[in-house]
Length: 456
Image (cartoon, rainbow, N blue to C red; front, side):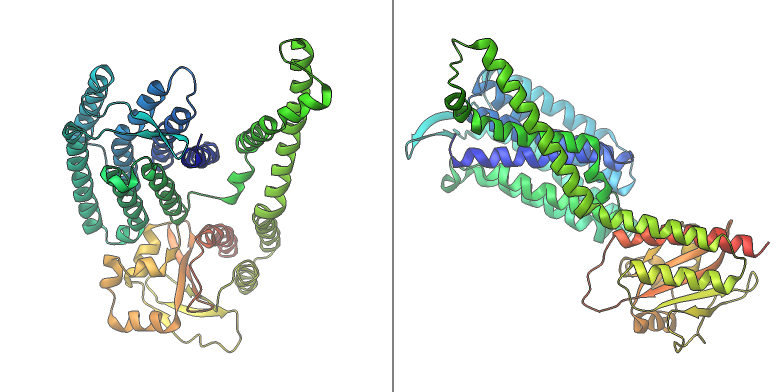
């Protein structure tokens, strides 16, 4: 296998890594559709990798597996994009799936659209070269029409909810990179180079970033048993295959003469290597990646225990501010409370004693109405694209922009919004950390229960 073959191997490892990781995630339509995309990419990259090493039964078989993955990817993206935007599937998706499956079956039998590649020597290494025929347009034309249809769906979703435009940016970037990589296959300069597989790697990381922004990924997923065992097995196979020659020399084992001893020794060595790598992965993840999440969980548990022992509202608010400042790198924190339904929300607490608390927020404020209807906090940067933001008074926008608001979160007593937490940026250049949104949700949920008990 040449250097190009390793690109397919790397792609397959990346897709397999993400697949194992998201198998342990909390299931919803978005996660399930992302898993379908990963399966399609695995078919594509795995078929390409096994084809390049001439794995059994034949490279032609693995070529067909890879082609099936490519043809099904647009439909997988269709499912992902609709799930991401909360839109139901429609008839065009089913039509495309049926057309591609028919084309695939016809191509297996006759190779009329895109036949198996030819193996040629290039710089002393076997290289796969595709013979591009005009009939390939039968595959690309429906895919192109379907991608245009997906684009129109995206435009419709973004018009209905301008906030989705920001969330769809990495998804669209990934699709464009993937499509460009496949189009470049027809250029002679890239003949034999797996530019399509390389673009697939870039694409899946764009999708991964989109899921992070939707708060569907947590570092705790890296410590899942399936991922630990999968990573341990992968590294064990790689190391084991490389040390086989040295083991044969050390133990003077010949496979054709010492079959039983060969199997016993190699099985023991493989199990030892597997156990070692699994243990090291768990240790690495728990000590480096998951340590911060465990620390946050412990702090929230301590916070919950502390405020459950008091009915003093001011003490509850102070502890809420304190735990947020301890766990997040943010600027100032303000808490506004409503004395009675219909009255404005007035500033009552802050992390700095000298901060101005004379401002108020009216109950009719569109941002207040949004917090009443939703459970999750507002990411102010994304909120600026919404209809609710555009319907706010200019004075209200100016006050929030001048304060450099980063997050807004609600404190609820049942269905009533009794308080609002405003969190500002520590620095204008600081990037948004989407894990902070989950943290804010956890803190406000605990604080809301304590406030409800204090008002009884």
